[in-house]
Image (tube, rainbow, N blue to C red):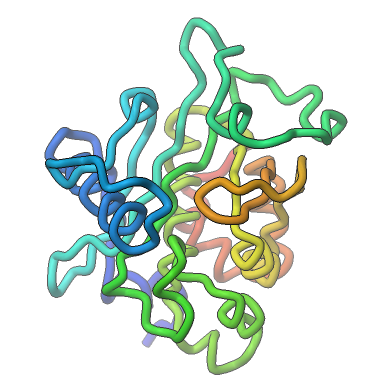
Length: 243
């Protein structure tokens, strides 16, 4: 019997490309639950219970679905560059101070996307301290990520969202990600060989977060060196990679 991370995840969940309005509404509904009701990082000003903004039409969206209940457990979007005006600012560039210009210099804007609305349903946050987070990663979770007990609790829905982002990036030809990340999530991901580079100070943006950037190939190479099984999960055994 296989004990791979992919098999462990696929027993309980699947990844769903939200490529139609019905599925996108499920993503907006989950975002409303997490950002407006649970964490209150956004005001409750959506009478239809769907958190949506002007970037959604230019984004790729993905959902994680719990197979048994058919409940959507998590969602993430990838804000793509403007197709004809790549200098159009991303949210990170309007809400955060970016002072590490040396890190982002040379990154082609036509290949740069922003990770956004990365969130997990409260129904799938089981550990103490996770309920007040968008990602399901608390300070305690981040610090425990290397323990044997923590590894046995995989699949981490957080890592599945990273896999969704890899797939969307390959589909749209994106090579780099912007992201505004909770410090606990940054620490959590480093345990698995995923090293985001900070490009500015902490900002008060949906909570205290730090603007970061990463090259997708660098992300996958780091994971391959530290955890080949996780690399196989993120890339679907090499189907989704960037050269």
